[in-house]
Length: 217
Image (cartoon, rainbow, N blue to C red; front, top):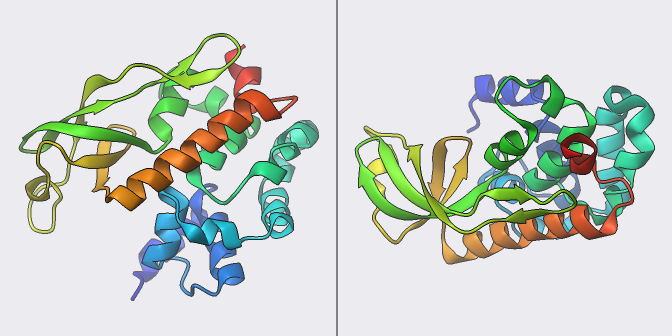
């Protein structure tokens, strides 16, 4: 059963809720907080391909057009290549709704890098800290990319049910901001890489008005 408090909290966020709700309604997968739907949004799986582009576009327009205002036509360019995946929200929605300018969590490139779900290879586990090799987001003045892998330290849950005791060097994990989210199976890793790189390619090559470029300059 889904925690009612968690459901109310998720509905209040501009990010996951409209995408989760859309997938639940259009794929027949059930509860918006079911494992498969949550995995589709954060990591990526076959449910994403079951959402019609028109339905996806209507959801994005209904939820975000009022906030985007005059920039809506530029943001809408990305809808034909979009799916209800977190990478779309980060690389398309985030810049146009002003979250990069309003945030106090760092420079725009840092925010994009930390907010996206990224993948990394565990090097060491030390209690509630994990050393992970991951590739940072880069900007060369025209294109977003991924730089050479480097070590970073991320937090991990400990105690009963925590992830720390389940991790070992050589595991692949997903990361969000400064935290390890979960250990990735080979299928999940492939899905996360695939959908992340698709959004990067779309942002770099397919859009006349890419959102990140309007902010990063």
